Image 1 (tube, rainbow, N blue to C red):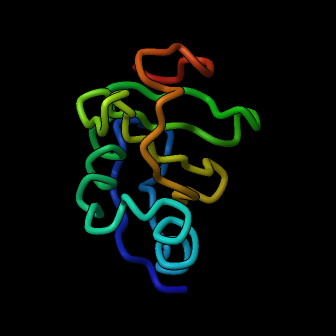
Image 2 (cartoon, one colour; image 1 turned 180 degrees about the vertical axis):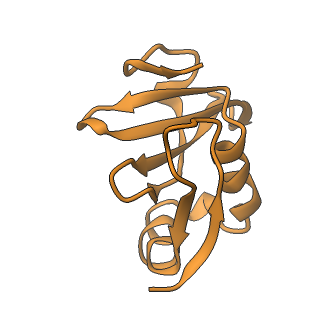
Length: 109
């Protein structure tokens, strides 16, 4: 298992979060080609999100959201989905459904 990066989050109870090369190459770049060349933005959303909410699959996934990093006419926001049990990023796309929404239960701030 090769790790591309490990980054601290503002959540004191969560260990530093990692992105595996296999997740990057086999999922993120395949399913979300707009993320090509955006590793630094993924690091940034984990390090300094504007908010963090729970994922739809329950409390074992957190959605790190950066409302400052948007794309397209509909102003999709950058998110990183983190498995809190493994402290691994499982995906990182731009998503319209988190733009200005209160989707998910607030975790931080």
